[in-house]
Length: 222
Image (cartoon, rainbow, N blue to C red; front, side):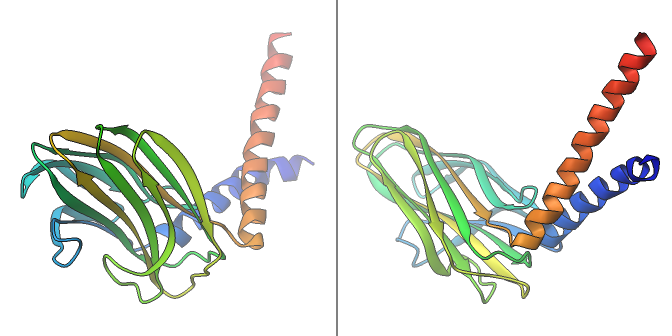
């Protein structure tokens, strides 16, 4: 029993490192903007290994702020800060892609949120999977239309891994005049059973460590 408790920190650390490495090794996050419905996509911001951001960029009549990153597995791509402002009517497409993913995923869950949307505006949020590890494109996973503030989820049973693949988030914004939209889109892999087992072992180990520490502290203060 004492030996098992000694190994718990190792188990927990191994589980965390294995899950993180399987999803994040050599990834590349990129952001692109388009005002012609995706016919021409302009890379913007600073493409990074695990994140990319755009700080208040003016683009063809739009003002865009965006922040996207790769999360802790199974969170593959999360655009948790996205704000688009316009002074006049028009359309804007924002593409966010993470390439070189290799984590085994027998399905994908997409979370959609519209936090703020001006009256008369609409936003379509869509997620894609590219088995060819392509930029800005792929087979559609899930999509959701917003004409007001709201949220929802979509599931797709397409599989990916262990060969390198990419996932893309697309925000299609239609403005009827001055206003802005604030959106969030998150793509999560549905892990294979073996990965779930590793996660349970890791989190279980962490929980046991916490309980053991509490018992020792209670004994010491008694």
